[in-house]
Image (cartoon, rainbow, N blue to C red; front, side):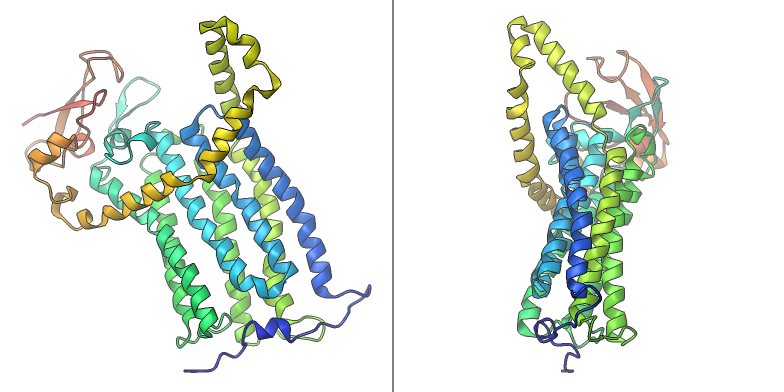
Length: 430
């Protein structure tokens, strides 16, 4: 095996920088500048997150928003650790990047809840999630989905998004293991070292995840009106893509000796401090963008309405609702649900279970049509070749539309929506 051109962590420990103007090293000035951007970025992001916690009126949406807002403090924290101790970047850097998977999974879950508010509660069966394909627009009519928006389509998108979570965790652990074994070689693109292979795997997984989210967004775009969904995704993409890109570009330039190590600019200054400083600047910009992408105004109004309704139903609670400390239990509940990511683990496991069914005809996980009907999931029928449309009856309860109203929509768009109380009832036009 080829020898690593820059052995780590010896490269950080054995190089001592000369002082520059002012009597300090480049590392000292880099730490000061990084902190100047880190502190306000962290305050802005945490302040916005705490506001969402205080007005926790839509938990299914806001717990994912809070996790996304935590991305800036996580990035700035680990960037500061890296600048304070260059050798720690060998382990803190990959750990920082692993939060990318949580943020992207959270934005996908947020999108799903925009489309179908009961998504979190019904993710396991997908019945509630599949109802997202038929939504009522402002004119009161249903705009039909396309044939691609089926249960199989949703399973595929979900798997492609969530595959990034275990792959990112696995590559992070493998980075630590191979680094300890001396076969990682961070600044080499030689195929004889683990770095290039883990880099390719992680980056391909990231690209697939982002493209899957965009693939989910495009056909369901009308459901995101008023939510600034693309701006929300852009905030995450700025941190994720720029962090990955700039770090790898610097490593390649070092490996090709396009950037020279000097007595004042050490290896650690170039490979660790510069990327950390750039992340701090980008985090500050993203923290400002968060206020436009994840404004708490909507949840402010919803929270006031809920408190007003509670006061009307029970006048004796009105003074308690207005008490300054009345939001503390709600704040703690929001913090617990955002930090305790059990739902993310469950969703990831469920998404990985979709993989076998994606290779089976019809995407029904190998079940017969009768079995799927009994479970409330109706697989696409071969009748679509004989009839292009189905009649959609509104639910008798009137939750969807006026009782007895019928709509005609493409068969492929609606044939899987079936089963649970409150769902649309379908009837083939054979």
